[in-house]
Image (cartoon, rainbow over all chains, first blue to last red; front, side):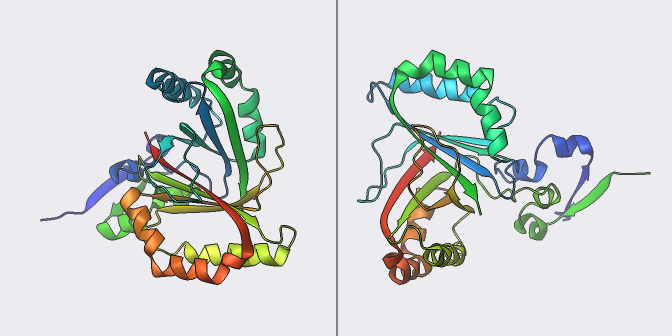
Length: 134
Length: 134
C-alpha cells in the first residue's frame, strides 16, 4: 500500500494557513519566528459567574478577528497547584503579533476599543505581560 | 512559468515539523489546537546583571530540548508601559504542551530538575501561569 500523499501547493493553499498544520491537528503556523507576545490575565468582577465568564470568552472570540493578531489562545487556569503558580485569575488571553507596532495597532483598533467599552464591567483586575522574543 | 510546487509528504517530513511554516519564515506548526500553556516569569536575584540574564537564557535554551515541549519562546519585557502592564520581571519563558500530563512529564524530566538545581540561585522570584485552552 502506498501511504505517501502528494499535496499540490498553490499560493491559495499557502494563504489558507497551514495545510500541514491542519492535517496534523495543530495550530496553523501563523506565529512569526520572533513574535511580540501579549499575555493578559482577567480577574472577573463575579469570579464564580459562569455567565460572565462565557460572555467574556465570547467577546474575546470576536476580538480575535482584529487582523494584526497572528495567533490567539483563550484559556482558563489548569488544575496544577504549586506555590509558584498563580491560579486566582479566571481567563487567560494570549496573543502573538509580528512586532510591537502591530500590537499598538491592535490597542487602537475599533474592535478592541469596542470590546473594552462593552465588557469592562466584567473584570475587576487585569494584568498584562508584554514580551519580546529573543 | 509554473510556480506550483509539488511536495512529497511522508511521515518523516511531517515529523520534521512544518515545511510550510519554515518556507513562510514562521514558527513550525508544532502547537496543538488546544494546548496546555505554561508561562513562567523570572525575577533575577541581580536584576541588572546582563551576565546572569545571559546565563539564564542560555540554560533555558538547553532546557527547551525536553522532548515533550511542543514549542517555546524566551522573551524579555517590551517597552510598552501602561498601568496594567507588569514589567518588573526580567525573563519570560513560554511553553506549549499537548496536555497537562505532558507538562507533568516535563516537570519531572532530568533535564528540568538539573536546570533548576544548577540555576535557581539566579532568580529571587518566579511566577507561573498554567492555562488550558478552551
